[in-house]
Image (cartoon, rainbow, N blue to C red; front, side, top):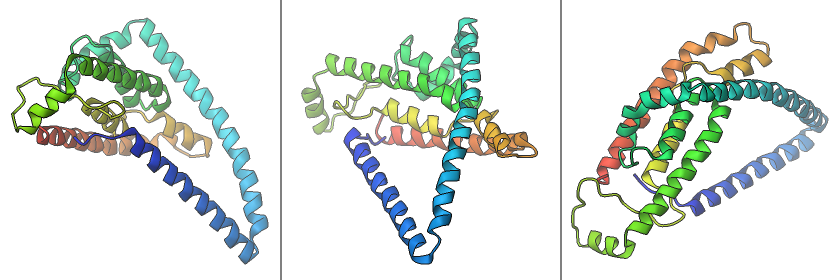
Length: 236
């Protein structure tokens, strides 16, 4: 799988800021030229009020489910779920050592995403990335990177179980795989979307459950296949 440099992400993020800024300026100029500037101003004020109301509502939902996740963690439910996910984690992340802390945080993130708790999954996701970075630092400390690259340049094949070391500031294959699966995660109960639909007056907010399961199941299967193909193409 292709490695992602953090500097590339920063540059792309900066480009998006310019794009959004340009769209806002063009919208204001167009409204001024067409005489609809008062409507744009009123829409901005109304949207600001609506955003604050939505944030308050979603904060309550997030607090509720984060609390439920913490209760489940204290009760040992999360620990049991992590054990059940071990075979899947070994399949998705074969290079992460057994018993490593990253496994638990990845499992917690997956569990939260499956139940549609995207915001509740964020803390576990951040900790998982931090642990994966620590793992990569340990790999750098155990291997002579210069000698490893020289060996690779001679075209020698890596032995089974050989772990490719990436330079500092570059996302490892485990990080890339985790990010892709996190984005495409299967959702059985899209709690956040149900809350959004309820906030905006949907007659049946839970009607999205069926389509969400089908869509996220397909996206997750595609993500797994993609990650495996890319890793195999790199001999990982």
